[in-house]
Image (cartoon, rainbow, N blue to C red):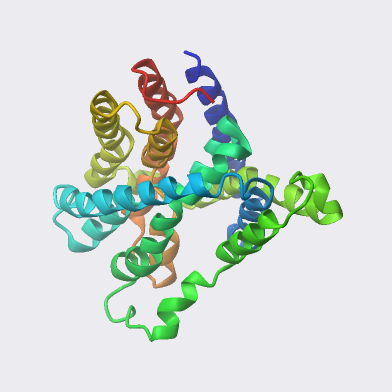
Length: 329
């Protein structure tokens, strides 16, 4: 129960923010383009600030060598889950377009918005650093395969070399690079206060990431036609695979691996469980909508999986902790 109650409390907090966003949009307290504005703020300001702040205060010469294992673990994890997602999606629907949506959702959970919020809230900035390192390969595959191959319509995805490179030159990665450089500077300390007003600015902007991300999620869900959406079977199949089957399989594999290899890092296990236990992401709504594609199934997946994750995530952590595969943080 040690981790279950804090996780349940954190999920309750995040769910309350989602409800606030939902109500604000449904009651038209905010304009229809408010979600778009918040999305731009998240991607161009708050997330880069969170990443920059984490790296400039935690990424030091003392821990740089130990972080390589998390990057490697991320590569191995996505190398396994991406092909598995392609295979599993074939059983979710016979429709080719829906299969692609399911593939993306099963390969890439909401490890960014929701994952960062859960990790920061439960485990603090120290562990958020290793989680961000762990998820770098996920972002790389999203930019090179996930979005162009699965979410952009055929014929729209032909891109020049610059267009293929451009997604990597984004505010989040720029924030990470700046954070790495500042983190490696030989300061006497690496607290936010050691960076003066700039440190306070980065810290406060980064703290906006989690609440705004959840309010944005609620606003996005509020635009869904629930009556029409909830009649699609792939929504429930994909949500069950994402929230229950994949995390349980991962827990089973790690339980066996730790029995055979006791020196396996439990921090790596926790990173993996965090990324795999998150609900389906919002990119399957946002990107296809920009091309005029039907987002009914994707919207339903986001709605159902985010609601159910408030219960499944605490239960997944409880199970993983009860069998002793998680570290004591």
